[in-house]
Length: 326
Image (tube, rainbow, N blue to C red; front, side, top):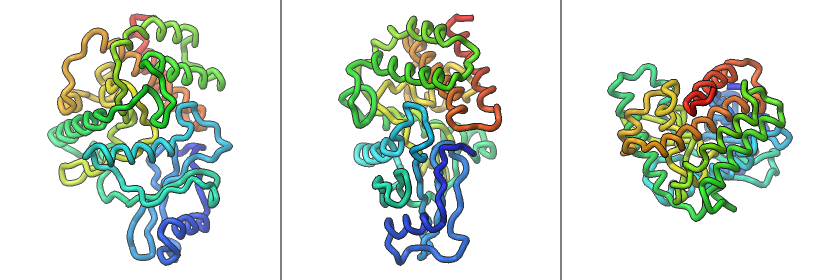
């Protein structure tokens, strides 16, 4: 997937990175040792075969001159922090970080390397799976997501802090940043920004029930899940994590809009009881937050086509209708 945030590097630079991470003896030779993994939207990722045949993945953050959305600033540092937390506090499988470099000596951005996961991407292969297989994987994903949410934080917001004492304050800032990002680029939502802000303000009281900051993966879509032989073998791409309300997780989005997929198996695996009316109001705010990002990020990514923008605009109409607004 194409995006102006992808910070591609020359073969010489990639060789220098490999030398730093694994030593000069592992620097590949020839011209068939690297390929770009193209299904991500944000970071560039390379699949690299080292001199001894070991395969690794190298991820590079966006270049500093490319403006990203507010919540995406420092995303690679968030991913590295998330991987440490998940490894130390859960049994959820995630890639091991072999080496991370934030010096900006070899390129103009943060980068790190990890082992290549020899497995299928759930989001790519799910069309070839049976209904029973899909249910089993989604149920397992729900259980894994619940374990991730078992990590407790001391405040709401960024993993590294500083955070907010209440979830209402934190989410107000988060969704406010997204709207400000959209206004800065004059992104057309199809609705006046003041109307959207009023809709949010009228429902923020529902967030007062959330009192405990939990680790939230938030970007745990099927495309970030690696599967093999009936099991989840790794969860990848953790750069959007924060401490918040677990009900904001991606797997619950279908509760509001089935266009995002049937959530039944995920909810069953998670062990989530039927939502209360207050929780349904919370969920609508979270789906609104997601859809606003999906619309506005198309400008920041420099999309040349309008497919995602058009699709997300339709979803915004649907989620606004859920609030009873015209």
